[in-house]
Image (cartoon, rainbow, N blue to C red; front, side):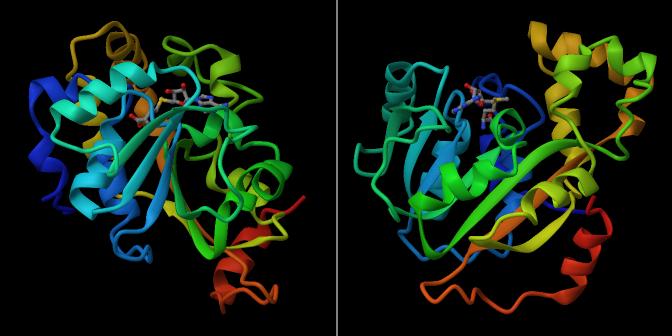
Length: 261
Ligand SMILES: C[S@@+](CC[C@H](N)C(=O)[O-])C[C@H]1O[C@@H](n2cnc3c(N)ncnc32)[C@H](O)[C@@H]1O
């Protein structure tokens, strides 16, 4: 069974109330368990929401974090970061749209995105055109997204529709769908794409929350909808200057290719 020594430090009612979905810290702790980001590296927490994951990345991993989000209030996030004892050198809130990021090219050692990539990353061209330009050659993408064990969009189960509309569920897909999207990248290679072990624990923390959004999500899960869902991690590395990229596991290539159209 997975242990969460880092995320457990954040298991307080005040901090957990910042969650907007399945505990993103547990997902991130798994996602980064063998990360390749240099010490003190500059990272973008893309779709950072209320900034909980950004604080986690700054405090637990020592990264310099740009907390980039389209809808959340950067000033509210800034005061949260200050309350958490972080300086403006350690963590920088930025109002930003993933489709037009306001950063210099090749700025980040890594872009990390938890429970957000589903909203902007489904078009295969997004990765090469909108995201990779901001990553250093050889830098990484670490992505965790809510997924479906098997795409069921032709006949959505009633229990899922208790909580989510077909439009919302259109952001939730299976591993094959996502493999198909990211394998089309010319600028980055897949290091890993897989189901996450922290899925159950992350959902359990979320469903215990007393807020409208968690209450809404409980409807589907209590009706048995959880059996259709999983969490998916995608780790990619931007190819180096010579376009050669790193050696990557052929078996991953084969798995991803099986799903190609
Ligand atoms: C479910 S929240 C996840 C927040 C945070 N990563 C976490 O796990 O707690 C999704 C976030 O994605 C952000 N988002 C959606 N579309 C975006 C876009 N085009 N550019 C930047 N952020 C976006 C939303 O504002 C929202 O805060």
